[in-house]
Length: 254
Image (cartoon, rainbow, N blue to C red; front, side, top):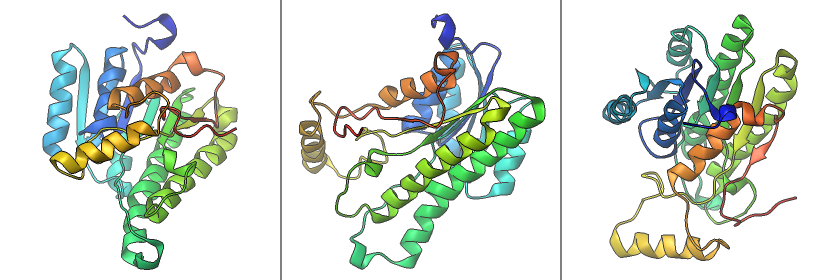
């Protein structure tokens, strides 16, 4: 059983990107803490697997096959919840291209998913929480890319930097309603999204990323899920507008 501050029994959480990786791990852990979890993703098969995992552990899960870039789909799914206590906007995509080779369509696609999709989730969650007087928690997914430069990071990093600004701005705007807004900025995490290579090449990439961390390893989805649980719970009741960085020490900003 979770410590009392981490007990989410009787609360409802909505997780986007729940079909795999960080989204799945977050949905499963929130359910373990007692929350009723609404899982959203465009990957129907992955959603079913996540729900099966949650139900197999005695939890409650509902699935919403949707595209986070479609505001109407997201609004309908959020409004299907009787109440909403936690929104974890995790859904995102990866893209890498040199600045001089970046096309309009590359930037538009990444911003549409990684920023607008998060914005829509935050807006719908905030409306729902304000309407019911719920002192809830909204959690966005930023990235270690906001703290470090690197070749190919223009589209992805720009979108995640926009998420950080969204987080801070929204925290100031809806704080008077008792709603907290925080971001998680993961380092390199072993997920289907980062597993872009096969065999030796992937192992080489992970070994390189592990050497950048004082802890000597890359992260796992569960490492980030615990950060999400902390921000979702009463353990972070006086925390808002902050960026939590479970990155293995790769970046240590002031």
